[in-house]
Image (cartoon, rainbow, N blue to C red; front, side, top):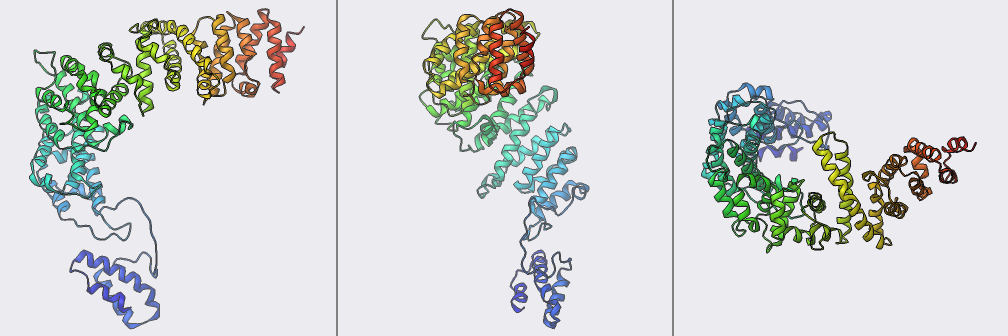
Length: 586
């Protein structure tokens, strides 16, 4: 009891802290009240006068409590009812004590409440932001994040006041001199959110801040690009990792700002649509000893088509500095960004990058991001479809791609043609119909070349897994000829080797149903190669298509093949074709 009582005397004379400790002492002493000891009762009453709050767990000597989240000292309604000056004063004066319980208020809880207040009524705050200049960076970051959420919720506020506020806090010397613990760099939080705000406020002309504030936004961005710290980024990281980093957000904001500037510029020089200050800054950073961050290289590639719109001469003149082949990390970052940022290659960019050897280098690059590999294949296949490449030239990119024997590349080719063809075939748009015909025109030569390589290496599982989905290309050809027949017969035996092969098999069955009216005998021969192990699966998912195809074979006079198909299903223990078989035995 004496040890419990002595704790309070050794504390600092701080009212809030004293109340917290008094509460804890009462909680401990409550376990001894039933003894009737006068000393215990007197001490308990002493602490009760300091902090009369009800004891949540009376008599508990030992308790472990876990919770998530933070508690605010004020509700959203209460904080919102205060004036901006009163809110700022409260933020500055609030001090967090030791947190013992879920109900204990914290600075984080207060910051979250502030953010919700700003999100709910952003105009109230932009009416007078001056008091918040003296708040800590922690609360200022929550203030800005509240504005960001409000704008995304399409709530209006005074952008001029907000941008001036950001400029002001960035001008304070103490803003840059404060040292933060690792993981709690509130200065970086402010820089990052400021970049997000400018990006959100410029990316869509239908909902953007007034063009008269662009100069102010540029002033902020030029500070951010000098001060925002690079992250630990490796080329294998995804576009989401890079563009959501502090420095990545700044570069993304700069490009969006430059695009809005260009769309609203009345400058006569349409060849250079972006602000000269941004152009000069980017040119300076092309020297990787000046700009060492990989985020910059990645961003150049990711936004390359946008940069081309802003200044074609700048892009063409600096193409080899944007993609520095002598610096592998920066080249990979830039080219990965380009591939992942451009679903389809831009005509001029394709020509320039090919002429300068970048696509050829990419074919031999060890991209750790598999999505980048897939996009590379897409670019080169599109180049072939658009006749920028020819398969007759063994130096062409498409020839080298197919003959690379790289299983990842070959698999990506198979999936590209199928998905591209499937998407275009479902459109009634005349331009897409023409595009579909161009895709189909490349299917047979690609099939021939792929099958030759895959079959030659079909003793390896990696190539068997590609032969399997190749069979689904049946839906992309108008007629099954002898060459395709032999290819499918050789491929379908490996149908279960590829992940998700059930979908491939279903597509094969659907394609065979369409081909049955034109080449019924060839369709029947393919059916006879389907592994018996897959008959149960087909009964569950493609029963109708199979029955329809078998009936077509009978009607077209191919009874012998149709009978064999029915018998194969029966031998596998799947007898849904029995009624069809018996119907045609009369």
